[in-house]
Length: 606
Image 1 (cartoon, rainbow, N blue to C red):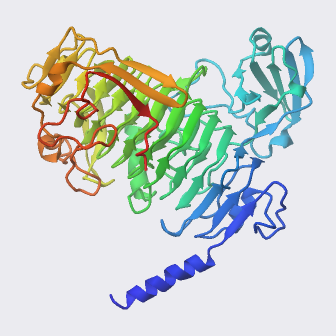
Image 2: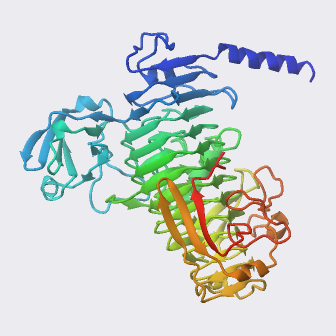
Image 3: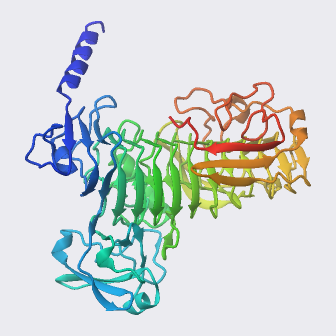
């Protein structure tokens, strides 16, 4: 072993010596060497040249291209990095500027483009489709029309466009693409009008491009398809069935369907398994043919991004998010005012999140905040801020164990729970808790901290733990008749919320109104609330592995991804809890009853 140390050191030094920087600038040329003084013109040219360990630095301006990285790095230390130059604004767009509009009538204009303009992908021919997609009796194209950065609404006919302001409609034939748009009183040839031209902004065409970092960009306008869990999941930016990506500090917006995907490839199927049994087969194929394991897939870091105005999901992934960390992201305006729907729509939507950390994210104005669907095991959802969503958290047909702790659930519907084997601790529930629900679907569960399938089971309902939460709506009494045993203690019930029948150590202040209010002040979010004095009289247990036991179906303990014991010993802000008597709710020892707390941004996401 002693002989290996110098060899490894020499190899590491050699990789650092050979690493180089490639610079990209709009005034460069792809014939250049890519130095700071002789930059390349396109990011794609730099991607073609970059080798493991290299850094691509992109300088200020708007780049209209799809980056298809031909290779990735070889390890976490020897990755390929794409980053915006420091303090420079760099935009990458999947759209092209559209000029040459002709007036049809007041407010309505038309443009014609030869189909060759779009190359081998025409978003105005491509119709959104896929498993579990609901078209609502009309076609939806992956194309889009943007007026000064804002997407218009796709209509189904020219007559509809004439009637609806800020809308568009398209037709194609063998030679041309025709687009009509209602710009109201604005003349499109004097404004910035853009149309989608590419199916992605940053997405490798083959799986296994590992260890790539994408940092500091503004990425917009992608003609993305529906990202079903049974399909190859293409997004504005996606990892395409790989390992070890870092996507951080970007602004990602205006994807027709999904912003970021941590998803599967086509080898296990593509939109041909729209059933529970069909998806079970996809999972089996991913294990057999696609190498679905910690060694090959996942372990991504998605942090501190702003993701908004995506038609279906902010972040989604089928099986490809295993062992990943999703932290510090601001996700909003997801599936807002879109004329289609389906079962893959949420701020964060994962199938099979095994040992995933979802922490410190702010999610609002989405169809659903977080949707964890099938095979959620070993995952922790902690210290997230969710509000103004029709549903904050949906847990569908999971067997656990999973942990939901220290979150601020502030919408009207906080949890819809069709799962078992969950632990809910120190959350603030402003709205309703809906569960338990039985589900007859046979869904997989795994060996602890592994993708290896241990068996299949349906959902009986129950087998959950609720410790030290503050509940202010309908309460936990709906679990009174759960088929599987529950473990419930230390909760606080306010504003007519009803306690669980088997609970002994709890506070029930049915007439107390906590006066919960969200306050926005610039980029900061504050939470105002009032707590009853009697909270200081509670004697609560510290929530940890020994207290939570094992999930009934999987037989697995509630523990950290590395198998070490779990202890929820910090609050929403990262403040250490009193180990002898932790405070109920997400804030440890709040000291006074009337509070105004800055809950976003936090500085603990990394």
